[in-house]
Length: 419
Image (cartoon, rainbow, N blue to C red; front, side):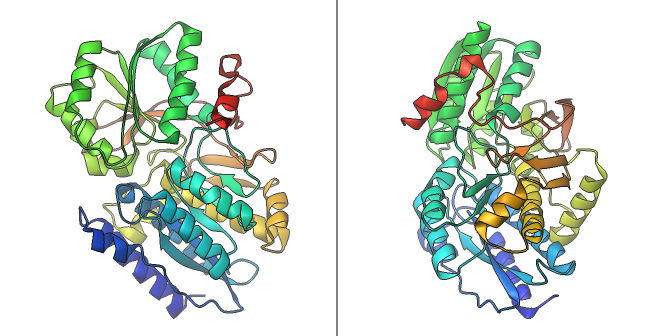
Protein backbone atom coordinates (compact mmCIF):
# COMPACT_ATOMS: atom_id res chain seq x y z
CA UNK A 1 0.00 0.00 0.00
CA UNK A 2 2.95 2.33 -0.63
CA UNK A 3 1.95 5.84 -1.66
CA UNK A 4 3.64 9.06 -2.66
CA UNK A 5 2.08 10.63 0.45
CA UNK A 6 3.88 8.19 2.72
CA UNK A 7 7.14 8.79 0.87
CA UNK A 8 6.71 12.52 1.44
CA UNK A 9 6.06 12.05 5.15
CA UNK A 10 9.10 9.79 5.55
CA UNK A 11 11.33 12.28 3.71
CA UNK A 12 10.05 15.02 6.02
CA UNK A 13 10.87 12.83 9.02
CA UNK A 14 14.36 12.15 7.68
CA UNK A 15 14.99 15.85 7.16
CA UNK A 16 13.99 16.62 10.73
CA UNK A 17 16.32 13.89 11.99
CA UNK A 18 19.24 15.43 10.10
CA UNK A 19 18.38 18.86 11.50
CA UNK A 20 18.30 17.51 15.06
CA UNK A 21 21.63 15.75 14.58
CA UNK A 22 23.47 18.87 13.46
CA UNK A 23 24.30 19.92 17.00
CA UNK A 24 23.19 23.07 18.77
CA UNK A 25 20.46 24.88 16.88
CA UNK A 26 19.68 28.56 16.68
CA UNK A 27 16.34 29.77 17.97
CA UNK A 28 15.27 30.32 14.37
CA UNK A 29 16.19 26.74 13.42
CA UNK A 30 14.25 25.37 16.40
CA UNK A 31 11.22 27.45 15.42
CA UNK A 32 11.43 26.15 11.85
CA UNK A 33 11.78 22.53 12.96
CA UNK A 34 8.74 22.94 15.23
CA UNK A 35 6.47 24.26 12.48
CA UNK A 36 3.16 22.49 12.19
CA UNK A 37 2.72 20.03 9.34
CA UNK A 38 -0.21 19.86 6.97
CA UNK A 39 -1.10 16.44 5.52
CA UNK A 40 -4.26 15.57 3.61
CA UNK A 41 -5.80 12.22 4.55
CA UNK A 42 -8.14 10.31 2.25
CA UNK A 43 -11.19 8.23 3.12
CA UNK A 44 -9.17 5.03 2.66
CA UNK A 45 -6.56 6.20 5.16
CA UNK A 46 -6.30 6.67 8.94
CA UNK A 47 -4.36 9.62 10.34
CA UNK A 48 -2.15 8.90 13.35
CA UNK A 49 -0.13 11.49 15.24
CA UNK A 50 3.57 11.24 16.08
CA UNK A 51 4.67 13.87 18.59
CA UNK A 52 8.27 13.89 19.78
CA UNK A 53 11.07 16.37 20.39
CA UNK A 54 12.91 16.68 17.11
CA UNK A 55 14.77 19.75 18.33
CA UNK A 56 16.06 20.91 21.70
CA UNK A 57 17.71 19.02 24.55
CA UNK A 58 15.57 15.86 24.19
CA UNK A 59 16.06 15.44 20.43
CA UNK A 60 19.01 13.06 20.90
CA UNK A 61 16.64 10.61 22.57
CA UNK A 62 13.27 11.16 20.93
CA UNK A 63 14.13 11.18 17.22
CA UNK A 64 14.96 7.47 17.34
CA UNK A 65 11.65 6.67 19.04
CA UNK A 66 9.94 8.53 16.22
CA UNK A 67 11.85 6.38 13.73
CA UNK A 68 10.73 3.16 15.43
CA UNK A 69 7.11 4.29 15.28
CA UNK A 70 7.47 5.04 11.58
CA UNK A 71 8.98 1.57 11.06
CA UNK A 72 5.98 -0.04 12.79
CA UNK A 73 3.59 2.01 10.65
CA UNK A 74 5.43 0.94 7.50
CA UNK A 75 5.23 -2.73 8.53
CA UNK A 76 1.52 -2.44 9.29
CA UNK A 77 0.84 -0.75 5.95
CA UNK A 78 2.81 -3.38 4.04
CA UNK A 79 0.67 -6.04 5.75
CA UNK A 80 -2.56 -4.41 4.59
CA UNK A 81 -3.01 -1.51 6.99
CA UNK A 82 -5.58 -1.31 9.78
CA UNK A 83 -9.17 -2.19 8.97
CA UNK A 84 -8.01 -2.28 5.35
CA UNK A 85 -6.85 1.34 5.49
CA UNK A 86 -3.38 2.84 5.17
CA UNK A 87 -1.96 4.57 8.24
CA UNK A 88 -0.75 8.11 7.53
CA UNK A 89 1.64 9.52 10.15
CA UNK A 90 1.33 13.23 10.87
CA UNK A 91 4.59 14.24 12.53
CA UNK A 92 4.91 17.14 14.94
CA UNK A 93 7.88 18.48 16.91
CA UNK A 94 7.40 19.03 20.65
CA UNK A 95 10.73 20.91 20.64
CA UNK A 96 11.58 19.75 24.19
CA UNK A 97 9.02 22.21 25.59
CA UNK A 98 5.91 21.00 27.49
CA UNK A 99 3.77 23.91 26.27
CA UNK A 100 4.61 23.05 22.66
CA UNK A 101 3.66 19.41 23.30
CA UNK A 102 0.26 20.64 24.52
CA UNK A 103 -0.17 22.89 21.49
CA UNK A 104 0.81 20.19 19.00
CA UNK A 105 -1.39 17.57 20.70
CA UNK A 106 -4.33 19.98 20.45
CA UNK A 107 -3.61 20.53 16.76
CA UNK A 108 -3.34 16.79 16.06
CA UNK A 109 -6.65 16.01 17.77
CA UNK A 110 -8.73 19.01 16.75
CA UNK A 111 -7.40 19.93 13.32
CA UNK A 112 -5.95 16.67 12.00
CA UNK A 113 -8.48 14.46 13.83
CA UNK A 114 -5.92 11.72 14.37
CA UNK A 115 -7.12 8.40 15.74
CA UNK A 116 -4.23 8.20 18.20
CA UNK A 117 -1.07 10.06 19.24
CA UNK A 118 2.20 8.22 19.77
CA UNK A 119 4.58 10.47 21.62
CA UNK A 120 6.39 12.16 24.45
CA UNK A 121 9.43 11.28 26.53
CA UNK A 122 9.71 13.41 29.64
CA UNK A 123 6.96 13.27 32.23
CA UNK A 124 6.65 17.02 31.77
CA UNK A 125 5.66 16.42 28.14
CA UNK A 126 3.18 13.71 29.16
CA UNK A 127 1.68 15.88 31.91
CA UNK A 128 1.24 18.66 29.34
CA UNK A 129 -0.56 16.35 26.92
CA UNK A 130 -2.73 14.60 29.53
CA UNK A 131 -5.44 17.30 29.91
CA UNK A 132 -5.46 17.77 26.14
CA UNK A 133 -6.23 14.13 25.38
CA UNK A 134 -8.74 13.93 28.23
CA UNK A 135 -10.62 17.09 27.24
CA UNK A 136 -10.71 16.04 23.56
CA UNK A 137 -11.35 12.35 24.32
CA UNK A 138 -8.19 11.49 22.44
CA UNK A 139 -5.80 8.61 22.90
CA UNK A 140 -2.09 8.86 23.75
CA UNK A 141 0.37 5.98 23.69
CA UNK A 142 3.39 6.97 25.81
CA UNK A 143 6.63 4.98 25.29
CA UNK A 144 8.94 5.81 28.19
CA UNK A 145 9.46 4.58 31.74
CA UNK A 146 8.18 7.05 34.29
CA UNK A 147 7.59 7.75 37.99
CA UNK A 148 4.11 6.23 38.21
CA UNK A 149 1.34 7.65 40.39
CA UNK A 150 -0.85 8.16 37.33
CA UNK A 151 -3.50 6.34 35.34
CA UNK A 152 -5.64 8.04 32.73
CA UNK A 153 -8.30 6.33 30.61
CA UNK A 154 -6.93 8.33 27.66
CA UNK A 155 -3.32 7.12 28.00
CA UNK A 156 -1.66 3.76 27.46
CA UNK A 157 1.67 3.57 29.27
CA UNK A 158 4.07 1.43 27.23
CA UNK A 159 7.15 2.13 29.35
CA UNK A 160 7.95 0.82 32.82
CA UNK A 161 6.02 1.70 35.95
CA UNK A 162 8.31 2.27 38.97
CA UNK A 163 7.94 -1.35 40.15
CA UNK A 164 9.21 -2.47 36.74
CA UNK A 165 12.41 -0.39 36.76
CA UNK A 166 13.26 1.89 39.70
CA UNK A 167 12.28 -0.32 42.63
CA UNK A 168 13.98 -3.54 41.38
CA UNK A 169 17.08 -1.52 40.41
CA UNK A 170 17.42 -0.19 43.97
CA UNK A 171 16.87 -3.68 45.38
CA UNK A 172 19.62 -5.08 43.17
CA UNK A 173 22.02 -2.27 44.03
CA UNK A 174 21.50 -2.71 47.76
CA UNK A 175 22.28 -6.40 47.45
CA UNK A 176 25.20 -6.08 45.05
CA UNK A 177 26.83 -2.63 45.08
CA UNK A 178 26.36 -0.81 48.38
CA UNK A 179 24.06 1.18 50.63
CA UNK A 180 25.31 4.79 50.33
CA UNK A 181 23.29 6.53 47.60
CA UNK A 182 23.83 9.86 45.84
CA UNK A 183 20.70 10.93 43.92
CA UNK A 184 21.21 13.09 40.82
CA UNK A 185 18.39 14.16 38.52
CA UNK A 186 17.01 16.72 36.13
CA UNK A 187 14.72 19.19 37.85
CA UNK A 188 11.22 18.16 36.84
CA UNK A 189 8.49 15.76 37.89
CA UNK A 190 10.03 12.38 36.97
CA UNK A 191 13.34 12.68 38.87
CA UNK A 192 11.71 14.40 41.83
CA UNK A 193 9.05 11.74 42.30
CA UNK A 194 11.39 8.86 41.37
CA UNK A 195 13.75 10.02 44.09
CA UNK A 196 10.90 10.30 46.60
CA UNK A 197 10.26 6.62 45.90
CA UNK A 198 13.95 5.75 46.21
CA UNK A 199 14.32 7.63 49.50
CA UNK A 200 11.38 5.76 51.03
CA UNK A 201 12.82 2.49 49.80
CA UNK A 202 16.29 3.28 51.17
CA UNK A 203 14.82 4.22 54.54
CA UNK A 204 12.93 0.93 54.72
CA UNK A 205 16.24 -0.92 54.22
CA UNK A 206 18.27 1.20 56.61
CA UNK A 207 20.41 2.49 53.75
CA UNK A 208 21.98 5.96 53.58
CA UNK A 209 21.15 8.95 51.41
CA UNK A 210 24.41 10.92 51.21
CA UNK A 211 23.18 13.71 48.91
CA UNK A 212 20.41 14.70 46.48
CA UNK A 213 20.98 17.17 43.65
CA UNK A 214 18.95 18.48 40.69
CA UNK A 215 19.87 20.49 37.61
CA UNK A 216 17.69 22.05 34.88
CA UNK A 217 17.08 20.12 31.66
CA UNK A 218 19.92 20.94 29.29
CA UNK A 219 22.35 21.77 32.12
CA UNK A 220 26.00 21.18 31.15
CA UNK A 221 28.27 22.15 34.07
CA UNK A 222 28.58 19.36 36.61
CA UNK A 223 31.91 20.25 38.23
CA UNK A 224 30.34 21.44 41.48
CA UNK A 225 28.19 18.32 41.76
CA UNK A 226 31.18 16.11 40.99
CA UNK A 227 33.00 17.82 43.87
CA UNK A 228 30.06 16.92 46.12
CA UNK A 229 30.31 13.32 44.91
CA UNK A 230 33.98 13.23 45.87
CA UNK A 231 33.21 14.64 49.31
CA UNK A 232 30.27 12.34 50.09
CA UNK A 233 31.92 9.15 48.77
CA UNK A 234 28.78 7.25 47.75
CA UNK A 235 28.88 3.62 46.68
CA UNK A 236 26.05 4.28 44.21
CA UNK A 237 24.96 7.27 42.12
CA UNK A 238 21.35 6.84 41.04
CA UNK A 239 21.03 8.93 37.91
CA UNK A 240 17.73 10.36 36.67
CA UNK A 241 19.20 12.99 34.37
CA UNK A 242 17.50 13.23 31.00
CA UNK A 243 18.57 14.40 27.55
CA UNK A 244 21.97 15.78 26.66
CA UNK A 245 22.77 16.64 30.29
CA UNK A 246 23.91 13.02 30.50
CA UNK A 247 26.62 13.75 27.93
CA UNK A 248 28.07 16.54 30.04
CA UNK A 249 27.78 14.69 33.36
CA UNK A 250 29.43 11.44 32.33
CA UNK A 251 32.23 13.10 30.36
CA UNK A 252 33.02 15.45 33.24
CA UNK A 253 32.86 12.58 35.71
CA UNK A 254 35.41 10.69 33.63
CA UNK A 255 37.57 13.79 33.20
CA UNK A 256 37.60 14.05 37.00
CA UNK A 257 39.09 10.57 37.14
CA UNK A 258 35.99 8.88 38.55
CA UNK A 259 35.15 5.62 36.76
CA UNK A 260 32.84 2.65 37.27
CA UNK A 261 35.62 1.06 39.35
CA UNK A 262 35.26 3.92 41.85
CA UNK A 263 31.48 4.29 42.06
CA UNK A 264 28.54 2.61 40.36
CA UNK A 265 26.24 4.88 38.37
CA UNK A 266 22.80 3.38 37.77
CA UNK A 267 20.85 5.23 35.08
CA UNK A 268 17.21 4.92 34.13
CA UNK A 269 17.23 7.23 31.10
CA UNK A 270 20.48 6.20 29.39
CA UNK A 271 19.96 3.57 26.70
CA UNK A 272 21.94 2.52 23.64
CA UNK A 273 21.12 5.70 21.73
CA UNK A 274 22.43 7.85 24.59
CA UNK A 275 25.58 5.69 24.78
CA UNK A 276 26.24 6.62 21.15
CA UNK A 277 26.07 10.30 22.08
CA UNK A 278 28.09 10.01 25.30
CA UNK A 279 30.67 7.43 24.26
CA UNK A 280 31.01 3.79 25.28
CA UNK A 281 34.53 4.47 26.56
CA UNK A 282 33.02 6.93 29.05
CA UNK A 283 30.14 4.71 30.16
CA UNK A 284 31.77 1.26 30.20
CA UNK A 285 31.10 -0.54 33.48
CA UNK A 286 28.17 1.65 34.51
CA UNK A 287 24.64 0.25 34.75
CA UNK A 288 21.14 0.90 33.49
CA UNK A 289 17.75 -0.57 34.36
CA UNK A 290 15.29 -1.12 31.51
CA UNK A 291 12.85 -3.69 30.13
CA UNK A 292 14.74 -4.17 26.86
CA UNK A 293 18.26 -4.05 25.47
CA UNK A 294 19.40 -4.40 21.87
CA UNK A 295 21.15 -7.57 23.04
CA UNK A 296 17.92 -9.12 24.40
CA UNK A 297 17.82 -12.65 23.03
CA UNK A 298 14.47 -13.27 21.34
CA UNK A 299 13.61 -14.17 17.72
CA UNK A 300 11.37 -11.09 17.57
CA UNK A 301 14.29 -8.90 18.58
CA UNK A 302 16.54 -10.34 15.88
CA UNK A 303 13.88 -9.39 13.34
CA UNK A 304 13.33 -5.94 14.87
CA UNK A 305 17.01 -4.98 15.05
CA UNK A 306 17.59 -6.14 11.47
CA UNK A 307 14.59 -4.16 10.19
CA UNK A 308 15.52 -1.03 12.16
CA UNK A 309 19.08 -1.01 10.86
CA UNK A 310 17.94 -1.74 7.33
CA UNK A 311 15.59 1.26 7.44
CA UNK A 312 17.82 3.75 9.22
CA UNK A 313 21.43 2.60 8.86
CA UNK A 314 23.76 -0.10 10.13
CA UNK A 315 25.29 2.32 12.61
CA UNK A 316 21.95 2.91 14.35
CA UNK A 317 21.08 1.20 17.61
CA UNK A 318 17.85 0.20 19.30
CA UNK A 319 17.00 0.66 22.97
CA UNK A 320 14.15 0.44 25.47
CA UNK A 321 12.11 3.55 24.54
CA UNK A 322 12.74 2.79 20.87
CA UNK A 323 11.39 -0.74 21.30
CA UNK A 324 8.44 0.57 23.33
CA UNK A 325 7.62 3.07 20.58
CA UNK A 326 7.65 0.25 18.05
CA UNK A 327 5.57 -2.21 20.07
CA UNK A 328 2.91 0.31 21.10
CA UNK A 329 2.06 1.11 17.47
CA UNK A 330 1.53 -2.61 16.85
CA UNK A 331 -0.51 -2.92 20.08
CA UNK A 332 -2.81 -0.08 19.03
CA UNK A 333 -3.23 -1.56 15.55
CA UNK A 334 -4.15 -4.97 17.00
CA UNK A 335 -6.63 -3.35 19.40
CA UNK A 336 -8.29 -1.44 16.54
CA UNK A 337 -8.56 -4.62 14.49
CA UNK A 338 -10.08 -6.43 17.47
CA UNK A 339 -12.51 -3.57 18.09
CA UNK A 340 -13.39 -3.17 14.41
CA UNK A 341 -13.21 0.61 14.84
CA UNK A 342 -10.90 3.44 15.93
CA UNK A 343 -13.49 4.57 18.49
CA UNK A 344 -11.59 5.31 21.71
CA UNK A 345 -13.84 3.41 24.12
CA UNK A 346 -13.96 0.35 21.88
CA UNK A 347 -10.18 0.38 21.39
CA UNK A 348 -9.62 0.72 25.13
CA UNK A 349 -11.85 -2.27 25.85
CA UNK A 350 -10.25 -4.39 23.13
CA UNK A 351 -6.72 -3.52 24.25
CA UNK A 352 -7.27 -5.17 27.63
CA UNK A 353 -7.37 -8.54 25.85
CA UNK A 354 -4.26 -8.01 23.71
CA UNK A 355 -0.94 -9.82 24.13
CA UNK A 356 2.01 -9.06 21.85
CA UNK A 357 5.31 -10.86 21.36
CA UNK A 358 7.48 -7.76 21.41
CA UNK A 359 11.23 -7.70 20.76
CA UNK A 360 11.78 -7.57 24.52
CA UNK A 361 9.43 -10.47 25.21
CA UNK A 362 5.72 -10.97 25.78
CA UNK A 363 3.78 -7.89 26.85
CA UNK A 364 0.12 -7.51 27.68
CA UNK A 365 -2.13 -4.67 28.76
CA UNK A 366 -3.34 -4.48 32.34
CA UNK A 367 -6.97 -3.48 31.87
CA UNK A 368 -7.11 -1.89 35.32
CA UNK A 369 -4.51 0.81 34.67
CA UNK A 370 -3.54 0.60 30.95
CA UNK A 371 0.11 -0.13 31.73
CA UNK A 372 1.94 -3.17 30.35
CA UNK A 373 3.23 -6.32 31.96
CA UNK A 374 6.99 -6.16 31.21
CA UNK A 375 10.18 -8.06 32.07
CA UNK A 376 12.68 -6.06 34.16
CA UNK A 377 16.36 -6.08 33.15
CA UNK A 378 19.60 -4.60 34.50
CA UNK A 379 22.55 -4.27 32.14
CA UNK A 380 26.18 -3.19 32.28
CA UNK A 381 27.58 -0.99 29.52
CA UNK A 382 30.25 -2.73 27.45
CA UNK A 383 33.11 -1.30 25.40
CA UNK A 384 31.14 -1.85 22.17
CA UNK A 385 28.30 0.38 23.36
CA UNK A 386 25.92 -2.49 24.09
CA UNK A 387 24.62 -3.84 27.39
CA UNK A 388 25.49 -7.14 28.99
CA UNK A 389 22.47 -8.24 31.00
CA UNK A 390 23.43 -8.96 34.60
CA UNK A 391 19.92 -9.63 35.97
CA UNK A 392 16.32 -10.00 34.86
CA UNK A 393 13.00 -10.70 36.56
CA UNK A 394 12.51 -13.99 34.71
CA UNK A 395 8.95 -13.18 33.66
CA UNK A 396 6.79 -10.14 32.87
CA UNK A 397 6.03 -8.11 36.01
CA UNK A 398 2.51 -6.85 36.66
CA UNK A 399 2.49 -3.03 36.60
CA UNK A 400 1.91 -1.36 39.95
CA UNK A 401 2.02 2.36 39.10
CA UNK A 402 0.83 3.45 42.56
CA UNK A 403 3.13 1.00 44.42
CA UNK A 404 0.15 -0.41 46.28
CA UNK A 405 2.04 -3.64 47.03
CA UNK A 406 4.82 -1.87 48.99
CA UNK A 407 4.17 -0.87 52.60
CA UNK A 408 7.08 1.59 52.59
CA UNK A 409 5.45 3.50 49.69
CA UNK A 410 2.31 4.41 51.62
CA UNK A 411 1.65 8.12 51.31
CA UNK A 412 3.76 8.70 48.20
CA UNK A 413 0.81 8.61 45.80
CA UNK A 414 -1.24 11.00 47.95
CA UNK A 415 1.75 13.33 48.28
CA UNK A 416 2.26 13.21 44.50
CA UNK A 417 -1.39 14.06 43.91
CA UNK A 418 -0.94 17.17 46.05
CA UNK A 419 1.97 18.47 43.96
